[in-house]
Image (cartoon, rainbow, N blue to C red; front, top):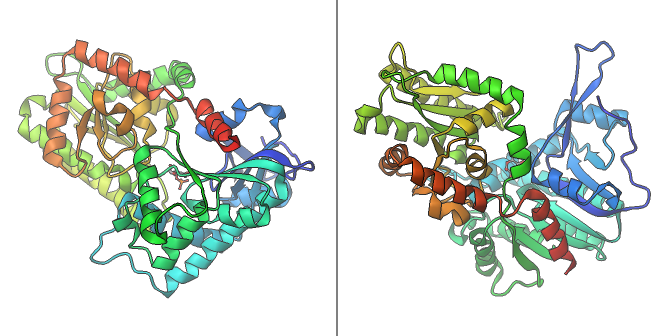
Length: 477
Ligand code: G6P
């Protein structure tokens, strides 16, 4: 149940985080007579980071109201201490979030356009861009109101690329950081954007004292875009940093051994079934949002190729694919979700037998079941087209019970740290991915265990709390 607390800080916050999606969301519960608001808390790197700086640090998280429940909470003055939700008009938010952030900026950084027909930068784009500016301005104004003299502000991601410069104009006294959780496009691809928009985006981030990225590759791409669009040199003297967010080993290991996860493991084992000789079937596990960049369909096609190239795996392996709905306001995401289901069903009807379902697909988000699959996985398939980091690649080796071979796209940020002990693939190469899956399934137990140990160590090198603290310290320096 939500607590009631004042959302505005009276003394000014010393540390501020700004992101589109906040740490809490609200749902109006029609089943409860008085229309109570139910608060749901999220996890992730920023949540751990903020809790690490302690409750007396006077921190504030500024985020957008996303759902009707969130807007209702703002209207009723219901909130969490340390969180300010901005009730940006729904149409402005939709243009900024669905229209610009998710349909343009996300597509550019993940190279998702089918370029013969898109993108099209027309009057409708310009109209949505004005909303993106207004949305960024709303954040900059709220941060300017809330921050104490000389406070540190860390602004997150492609939703808020313009806010650093806007905030700098309003409050030159602040230390401002920007962090990108996505890849950054190379100059050739970034320059699909109209020149003035490309310059605005870069200039917006360069309003920060420090612009940080998940890997050196994305940081270098950002610098290359600045040179290509704005000319040589980083004009404002903005410092560039890299902080490779790692998995939270303590949290994951504890959470993965609770009874609800054990229950899910039993249910999953029943779905997977036993091989004809009575032995355990091998599992190839993937867990993703149904996100275009995650490359779930090509993953299924590679699995089908494996069953064709190596019929000996039939009845002896199961592809456990969890694909959780994401960004379903966008038609292209709804179509993609449908395509994932269609291809999975096609494989099941072409290859399945009365005792064997080749693909076990689940689309309903269930964190305990995801952890159960992590523990059971023989092979983890993480094959994104492009990904800022990909934490699933880092989480599975940490949680895996018996060791797990990681088949990893070289286009994931995690490749920088995990590439050596993973089997790496070009995400577009179905034949190559099928070959890697076969190699993963046949890897000797000893080698698999050794590699998993090294993967888990690399994956946890920078836990979320430290990742966040490092950014604050670097901003102070
Ligand atoms: C990526 C982005 C995040 C975003 C998340 C989920 O990881 O970098 O900023 O929050 O996807 O996407 P959503 O649109 O549901 O917030």
